[in-house]
Every structure is written in structure tokens, then in C-alpha cells.
Length: 205
Image 1 (cartoon, helix red, strand yellow):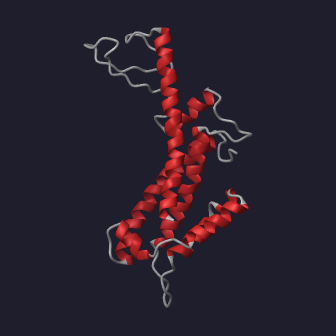
Image 2 (cartoon, rainbow, N blue to C red):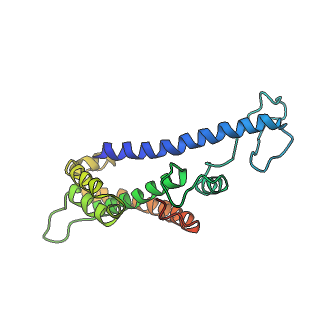
Image 3 (spheres, rainbow, N blue to C red):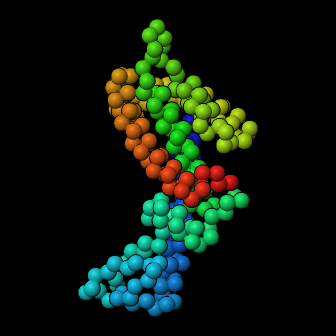
């Protein structure tokens, strides 16, 4: 299950990476076509260079977009890469999918860090994973995806596996580490939520 999640995250981030590389190549081509010299400024391309180097050797950085969440959103909106009515492989749509998954991860780790109530045993990661999925991601998935997810949750490892991941031996020690992770995730989630909400992107198809 952990491997499946990692693969899904990697596939999503690779989409954004490929988009960034494509945009960079297009920006470099545009720069060459315009024959922009290092001293010139461009509203899209910002060049940083060593003055002692010539044009062909300068170390330049293209800050056209894809350098932050907000720059990516602005870049894709300005270049009509975001479609609010149909599925496209835009960075913004991909970010939204990762954003939703982040809420599930936050909820799951938060529950995993909780101690058992008096007189009860610690709940299994599999049960917690299924429960938090139903609260967060399930409503965004088709019936087939939901059923596949439920089957995958059955393969979720026991708590001892997660203890090893965060280098602890007890639930109390795990709670300390997981609470820190949850707080960090929460901050990232809230920032992304604000950025996406400002541009009406929380329901991209």
C-alpha cells in the first residue's frame, strides 16, 4: 500500500516536472529567437548571469513559472493551460489531486498518532486508512477507484512498520513524531488551499 501511494505521488509530480521542462525549453527558444542579450530585461524571462561570462556561457535561470505554487498558477492561467470545464494535464489540476491526497495523509497520520481510548486496543492502520479515506478522498473518486482503494487498504502494514519508518519503538514516541509531521502537512495544505481557492481551482475536472 505504501508503495502504491509513493508511485501515485511520483506519477503526479512527474507531470508537473515534464510541464516545467517543456515550458523551460519553449522559453529558451523564445529567448534565442528574440536574441535577448544579458543586459536586456524581459517581462517573462529573468536572467541572472556572471558579468565576466559571455552570452553563450552565462549561468542563467528561467523564472517563467513552475518555481512556486503561485508562479505556476499564474503561468498556466496566463498561457491558457488550465481548463475549468474538462480534464487536462495541467500543473494546477495535478496539484489539486496532490492537495486532496495531502488532506487524506494528514488525517491518516493524525489518527495513527492517537493513543487508544481507555479499555480499548489501538486501531489497525488498515482501519484508520479506510476511515480517513472515506472522509476525505472517496468523494472525489469513482466507484471502481473506491473499491480498488478498499482492497489496497487490506495490505496496509501493521503499526510496527510505521514505527520503523519514523525510528521509534512505542506509540508514545510515534505520537510525538507524527504530531510534528501533521503540523507541517497542515501548514502546506492550508497554503495550497488558499492559493487554489483564490483562483477557483478547488473543483477542477
